[in-house]
Amino acid sequence: MQRLYSFLRRHPTGVDSFWALVLLGFSALWVMEDSQPSPFSRMAAIPICFGLSAVVALRRRSPEKTLLLVIALGIAQILLDVRVNPGDFAMLVAVYTVAANGSRWASRLALIGGLSASPISSLRWPDDNPYSSIWVGIAQVIFVSVPFALAWVIGDSLRTRRAYYLQLEERAARLQREREAQSKAAVAAERARIARELHDVVAHNVSVMVVQADGAAYVLDASPEQAKQALATISSTGRQALAEMRRLLGLLRAGDDSGGEYVPQPGVDQLSELVEQVRGAGLPVRFEVTGEARPLSSGVELTAYRIVQEALTNTRKHGGIDATATVQLAFADAELDLLIEDDGRGAQHELYEDGGRDGLGQGLIGMRERIGMIGGTLEAGPRPGGGFRISAVLPLKTGR
Image (tube, rainbow, N blue to C red):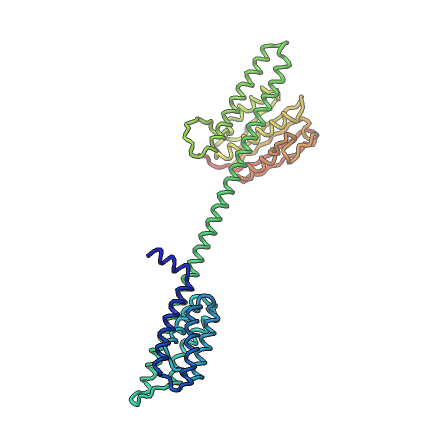
């Protein structure tokens, strides 16, 4: 049965043609009964019955044209005195089809035509029964008009339900597209965040390792102890870089239960260790904290750490040999103020919004993105007396 239903849905015109042949057969039997008032009416009934059967066969191909055809055939019946016959069932089918699939003007015309068919037929061929009264005639007109009204109502309801289902499908498709777009945006944002994290880890730790390696090579023969200390710093910095990169790569392993242990994200408490590491790399740094320290959200903690890390990395890269830096943290009532300054020659080397000449393009742009995500502000630029200055204001939020 399922195959039969599928076949019928794939061939709607064939199904309609079958019922058109059935209707044509009943119409032929009616014509053969010689129930027409004259031979001319009987001859005229033949093409009219063929036309009404064609309406049933072609109703889905062009509902509006078949409606106009059935109206024309109805007018021809009236003019040629062809009485009501089985082929007139096509008018009922046309009303339903147009109400379900046709345009709005055709649907209204079909309703008007269907409700007018019975009164016009009663006037054109009145009942010859002498015992029939006017009330019986009115009742007959109403009774015959009811099927046309029901056909139009059923067809219009089907149109409304089809439009409703189509709207639901479009809404579901739109929601699916929006979910996919949101998912892609979330993936892009996560990738950008991980790219910033990787930049901070690589740019900071690798630069420390390069400086220490150059120093070790310089004092290897003259001061082996200092060379050993530099190599130890390189080793610890490399391990720290690997740990942070392992943590970031772990974020990319969705559903990975490998059980690897990753270090937590750094925060304000780790700034003293960062400053000591930078000092060990050869950059004098003065670190000050004012105000009453308080718990911060993880986003503010990480943003503050990365800003200081990026600023000191840029100073070490572009500040020159004799550069010094200052890092100041000030806890206010509703914000955390960061001020990182240096007296090097980074401003002379055009440390602009592209993040410096490290080729990564993630420096100050990454800072602004981080601060923008938590609703803070950033000011960065050359100092009047030389060097570079970065000032950031981060809103305080109660951390977990």
